[in-house]
Length: 292
Image 1 (cartoon, helix red, strand yellow):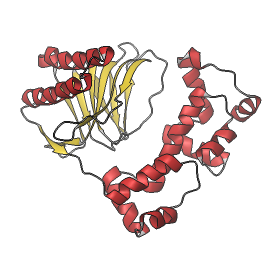
Image 2 (tube, rainbow, N blue to C red):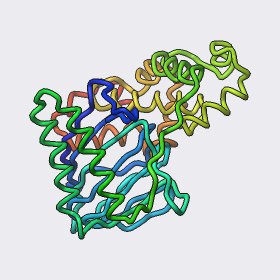
Image 3 (cartoon, helix red, strand yellow):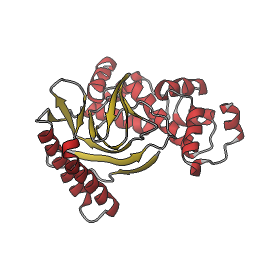
């Protein structure tokens, strides 16, 4: 998988509080295993070339050149490329908005072949600005995104409405920040309730409402993301990684990793190093023992 990605360093937003989060340009090269995942922001996924399937949960939807997929926050998804016609695509992540579709789904697939030149102009312009990083480039990227959204409404005959995303309560936002910073510590729902001065059942309900996931599941997902980073960039053994990320045991890490990533931690590390030889650092004796 060849990939060019950017994350925005500032919290630049429009007057409507739309915030650009990330952008990437990717091409499938037969060396990557697709994993279901979700984001806390809305994602636009535009197919430049090729064909394949787009998975929403356990359902697969065929996609092809010039398809644009809009995925609202907290929707589990991934792409699967056809090997004979590999996918090449753009993605843009944007926070502060979500899309209300007429069929009440949390995602939608539009084919934009008749206006592909217009949409590609906006995507290419965003990436040109990201490459050059001239003064005000983030604002231009944001303007391009807003223009792209208007163009899409024209193409689809207003098949959706752009809505302001719900903002989390102060207490939920504080809990999320705490989990992001202290994921390597032992944390229970009772601890979070005490910290936020909320009933634990009410806290869990509100957290799910705003983030689409319970506090403890969010904590585990955060730990898994850090585990993946450590598997990619270090030679730590699995037991060491479990300790560094707050899992109570290696077996609990292994169980959780399989649940979220549909593969073992050892398999994930192997796939990463096959895809990127630069990450083929020497694995420690403990890691080799654990992975066997």
